[in-house]
Structures are given as structure tokens and as C-alpha cells.
Image (cartoon, rainbow, N blue to C red):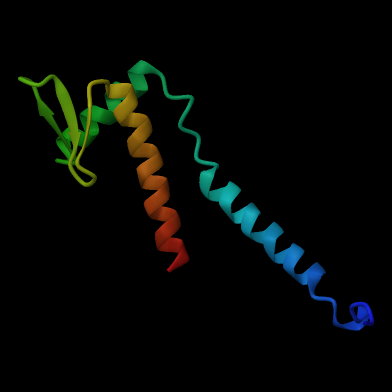
Length: 96
């Protein structure tokens, strides 16, 4: 049985395609969420509350991210989540 035809090798095309997909994934995941400090998080959460994106539930001591339904007991956790959630939605919108 003869080996693969060197003129019909699509392996390099596949590898190039994989590299491009990985680069796109890195770009989408490249949103920096780890560097948010407490003050910036609180400012973002206050803006989100004003925009009715986040609801404060004082009796449960949580903040609810309305678009996703996720609840957080920390403004920093909510701010990081919202940044990632927004980046994910933006990446999905670009892919459409």
C-alpha cells in the first residue's frame, strides 16, 4: 500500500487553521479582568446599579447581575464577572 501523496497533503492547512483558531481564542480571552482593584470594582458596580444592570438585595447581602441572573456577595467578584461576561458577549457578536 503506497504512502500518502505528498501533493495531496492537507495537514499543513489544518495546522494553519488550528493556529488561527487558537489566536482568535487568545484574543477573545485577552480581556484583562484580574487587575481590577476594590475602588474600580465599586465604581463599576455603582455604574451598573445606576444603569439597572445590577440589583442590590440588602436582606440577602448580594448583588444580582440581572442579564445573567448570577448573584455575588462581593463587588470585586461581580465586576470581574461583568467584564468577562461583556467580553464574551462582544466576542459572540463579532462572530455572527
